Length: 165
Image (cartoon, rainbow, N blue to C red; front, side):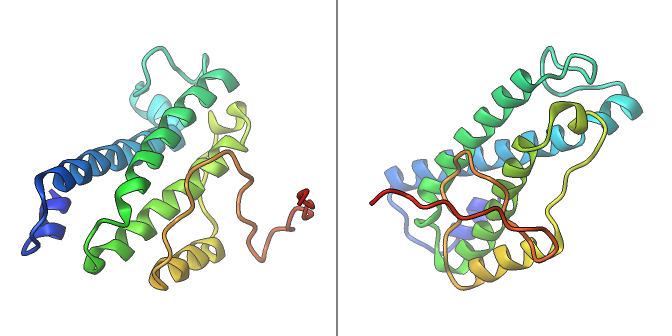
């Protein structure tokens, strides 16, 4: 739905449009899965539901968390690959949303499964601001990969490691 609005008035080849639709579908799936994962405890306690087959708060493990996050990272990778093909008028907003959700996946991955089963994870406001400034400047979010969360001014930064040259 949003993609049709973003592309309104733009001439887009069928092949490019198909790639953008695929990327949009994967981005929507990633957003939904991330929200289901971060609301796992509340959905199960309040609604008696889990949106992941075979996963409940009592069976949620590091392995199931990793499998879900690997699937989310794949969705974000696919959507990130076509982000640069969006019209400039919408690219920054989508980059901001993708950047925020990519940061959430990093934070979810670094949080123990037992904690996720009890707590809702969020991105601190200073980190949101940094991601928003990056998107406003026209930078695309990084490609999803296993990384440590971005430090905010309120959190200590991890020590820098030197990479071999």
